[in-house]
Length: 331
Image 1: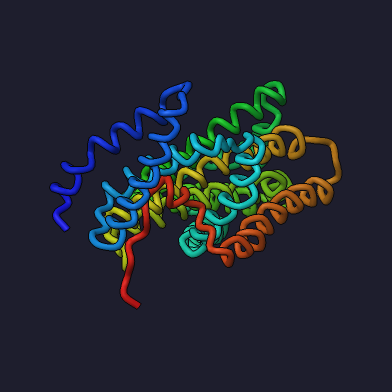
Image 2: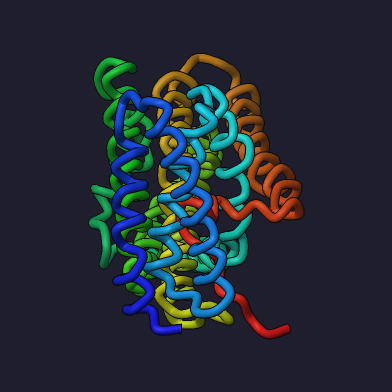
């Protein structure tokens, strides 16, 4: 089928259908015309899909048919249903789709943090090259803990949330490069490891974990998820699989946006924990326990709920009607 000729012949019908779907009120003649053009355009869409699945034309006709169907049926999905679908289906599916890049991100971060912590915690000469001894003592005896008591708690929570969101956005946006997430992961691992090494060298390792784990488990996991989702976009560009490269990249990018939006409330919760739980007067076990509960809830949502919706074929992407049909691949 000659796509250009097909478009030239049927474009007036598509433009008229688009005009009718935008018209606020239709008389009986307009309704009949809308129904007829809807049926014809649906046939055109089926023809394109079966003979020459041009991505741009398929997407255009899919969206046009979808809008015409909504106009005919008058169907409107309530906002709360859209929100529920996003939070309970699309988000866990998009998170689960990125599980292996997230696991890779976690391995990179943990390896850099543990190696750095052990190295600087056991080698005073290396530690002194990075931080003078006076700065080490100040960090271990005062600065590490005093950071969590800076300013008013609500303002501190907002500051923490903004900072963590910015770090995660960088991982998400620049993930397609394949380089920036790796740099960010190693850099954050080095910072966490260095602080732990200094605290351990001065006998403050228990204090280190008491003030890190309540919020850090969820906060660091959110950053790792953002980095993993970014790396998944990079991998879709490098190894698109059976899909055309642009289609694979677009699909991964749309799921990436879903992940980015979903991480906003996760980072908000971690900021709340850091501002109100970490520096609180609660017993250390209770503070850490609250952090573990929040982290475990997110992991259950990520892995358990994500696996459930993944088995149903949900990917976190937009519907085919809005995006266009999938490319058929040989079995």
